[in-house]
Image (cartoon, rainbow, N blue to C red):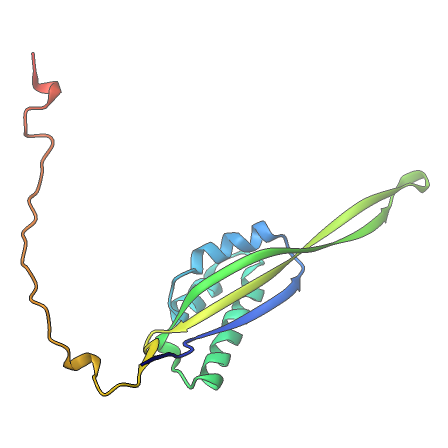
Length: 157
């Protein structure tokens, strides 16, 4: 019998005052990377969106070490998404007693981290995965196709 083990933790930041497009520009760079590599990238990128995302990644790693007892070197960002939040509407006073509407967008950022050292399933039977018979691997060689030396259409006169 196989039981599913939770290997993912998440951190959620809601109502962050920035546009979802600006946050997605940073999130697309860190998706699928390791935790340590992500921290280096976020520290060196020149965007304003990096700081709240840095805090969320750091919080998700703290959740992983506290809840699962996992090491930070084994963490990988498995899912990172940005959703649009509510738009805060304000009025800016202008000349001659008029007002001009100002819209301040917010976004919700979710960072999901996965521990790659933990197995996703727990084997409760007496048969272990390592005791299964190993399959034989076929060795194949790759043939290199050179498109310039085969006398293509440009070699004809």
